Image (tube, rainbow, N blue to C red; front, side, top):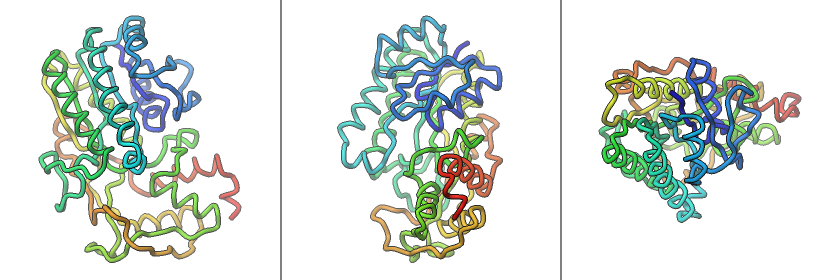
Length: 327
């Protein structure tokens, strides 16, 4: 059995590819390397350069590598950009997914793991988000992920394909410095970037109805996330695998922005006070997910904490920004 991992040279994708290959699974990566980094992958993992929306290429890869399962991670992923370019996000994340599903179904693939997001929930007013929490995305990125879930389930039913949709919460950390997230789009690298430039971290709003007034989020280590993909793939590889699953992937533990900034200060040694700015539109006071269903269905739970996420992310940041360690 071979797993095709789309977007497998990206930040999350490389962790997934390494985790699966390290556990003895046969994998092949398909990545257009516009944001992916080929050097993240060890030499023994085949890398095919190209798009998951290229039906002819996907069909050829499936045939040449005898692909029987797909882990689909390739997507447009920036919330702000999705608001500015919704057509791009629907074309790539929904239209591209439709092409991929049609192609791999025609190639005989009967197992499919889909990278979704907690963004499908929007800003629910609830203490702990479960898979039964109503979905009400507030931006085009979240909309395309929800539409992607619908499409994956429909294709699964039409083609006898067993499917799992994984709804990630806030992903952070790295297995090793060279695999760290190179973008400055999420809160941890955004704080690193400001500290490196000699500026104070920013906190957007400290008047939320939370213990310290700042937003509370669920942060999951990328290695825990990679292990969740491995568990999902193995669940689908069972002879009795059928139907579809939709699962939250998080820790069930809330960490406030101020608490996170404090951990970053301890790890980096830069303890300058955070600058509190007005709230950003659309930020929910709290977004923490229950992963009880993932534990039940996959035997998976997160095992790494926030400090480990920050320490590993900081090591990766300093590898690319050596000036950060001299401040």
